Image (cartoon, rainbow, N blue to C red; front, side):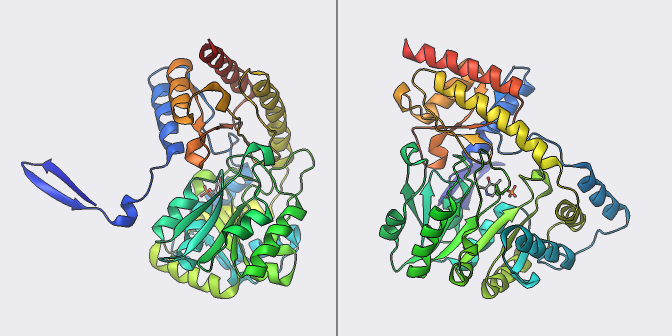
Length: 402
Ligand SMILES: *Cc1c(COP(=O)(O)O)cnc(C)c1O
């Protein structure tokens, strides 16, 4: 693609690569920055757009990073992360998931997003296909395009709690299929596959020889007794077909730290290590010491956060369903609800633009996640905000019905 601009008295012709030009800008970040601008302008905006916890990083994690900084731990580290952190991550997989990884199968990266990108870049190329259930986390298809591969989207709806079936998956697999992207608990829907459902999807991938990228970053955020089981844990064959992507952003509220990790079969981990060593080198040295404290220190923040999220979720779920024209299945994980707005007669982008304009409520249009009949509501914000924002949404919907 060529971009011509008249600058400094002459025309410049900028060539943008096909891959970069193929990307859609991040719609969640766009809504978020518009809402932030309105707030900065003094407007009383209620934000449901956040994709991050509203809690602070626990103090002992900050202290560990601050100490590392004070101690001069400020130089390059091994590109895949410091050995003690990779060991602590391997220990976490053993303890919580019953999975045995050697530290050289663990790669620490600059965020869970970076881990996903590394996986896709290291395993996919021109002509390959990657199967992604929709609604999807919006970066997956864009990363696939950056790798030169083709996203193959499997649509789902609230009728099946946004879950794909093994038959749907099997029908989408071709000789070109490289990866199946599984994200449970899910962003944007909050839906959680049962262990049986996960196993059945894993069985199809094992049978067909398709790798699974399992994004388990919300593994600790579960409600109503929902259980998380990694697809890697069902058999040695499932283990060998799975790359687990994870990170510190959600369960430890460390979004700005930019630290994620992955666990992969050895040849894939080795390839990813090479990619990372030539692109970003190591994740931030002292941040890694904070992450080590996150994994090895107390976890007592989590039940408190979960109790708070659960209260907000109950309120928001009931309130959304009380609004004429909206229906919303309850989420079982993460911190999102994904209400259906199709009866209200507006496409999701226009719905959200008008909602922000008229009622000063920021929500993310479902189209950003490949599902135009819905909105994403994040309840990683105070109950008072949720009450205020949802009563404004109610107002807005009543106005539409007139
Ligand atoms: C937040 C998130 C990530 C990773 O975020 P980072 O800030 O890059 O660690 C990965 N996958 C999903 C589905 C997410 O919502």
